[in-house]
Image 1 (tube, one colour):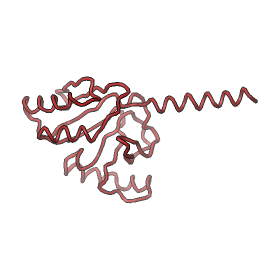
Image 2 (cartoon, rainbow, N blue to C red):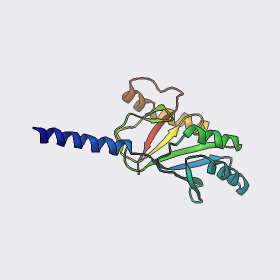
Image 3 (cartoon, rainbow, N blue to C red):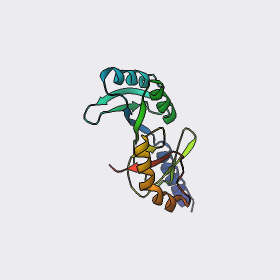
Image 4 (tube, helix red, strand yellow):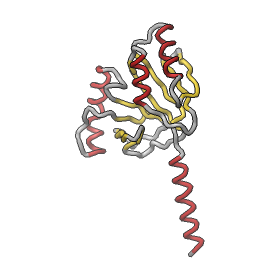
Length: 171
């Protein structure tokens, strides 16, 4: 009996430690208004000063910044948004990549002590896209709200509002 209790305890401990160690390893940021080299450099310089940023690369094909995150340092999505805004631009797309499939089957995710609802939690993936008025342009926001309002209501039993939310991006 003691062996069974010990086995159960160890199993729960291992599962919880794996889940709690899940962290964001990269952020993919597409910036609206960064069409030239000077504008891109302003954004890169601003982002590089954030305390959780290890390094930044620019993906020419996808026209987005790939921000490598320092392990163990929490990512503040609102600081990213403010940083880009203060550089005179706006976030057109923000995707967060986790070091595992920790967003699988979760109805919400907590970032910056704020819970963001995940609209499509049944999908399996290691990336989520942040959707909200400060994270996508107005046209895309309207489209996302239209596309995901029924799924949101089915999962959360309430109407989708103007609150920020997240969607799982399949890999």
